[in-house]
Image (cartoon, rainbow, N blue to C red; front, top):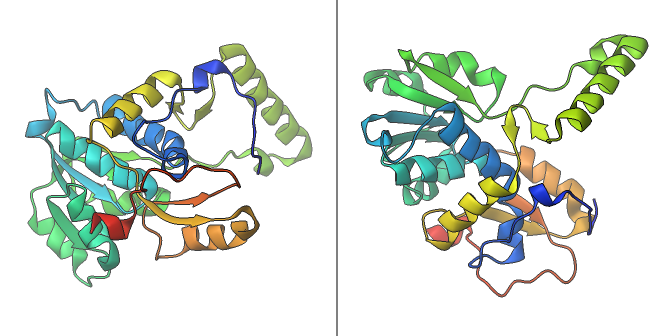
Length: 249
């Protein structure tokens, strides 16, 4: 954990004017993943989204909250799955239908619906088969969680060679990527414009201090988390109200 880092200028953009630093810090990574999933992988836009039915699985994650809003603002019909506690938040963010994950017959409820053109899976590979059941045959499931690098399964020598190749490829091609999405200032500018125009709001669930980092990770891994958890270093500005779940309600 560092208070200051040095990065290439292509990864830097001005924060949204209407967000404090805490809220702005929660946006770049999750926002870039969400935008890549919706605009690049799903190829949704204001020109075609109105005819699409979308399902966001485990939508109360930081990425899921943003995907829900982007799809809603583009005009898509958005259904989400989430825990009951997060249902009012997801409805406020634009979800047309909310299905509670605690429900014993959630699969039956979803199967009663027409199949979806696009299913966004924010839970990872463990939920892939679940998501496929509710997707049209000509539709597709988009997973927002990248697979872990498998270099530690290759042994010492092959693992070293693989890691070296990955680092070399990054230095040669000149971009940083997590999975298949790219982080760059153009995407950050788009996200900032959406926030400042009132069409996108990051959800910040908890703000903790650096010495509470273990507690932060525990909260992220718990079923109680909604949106993002942020660490606040001393001197961070809080002049602009944050978007918290209780504020949305």
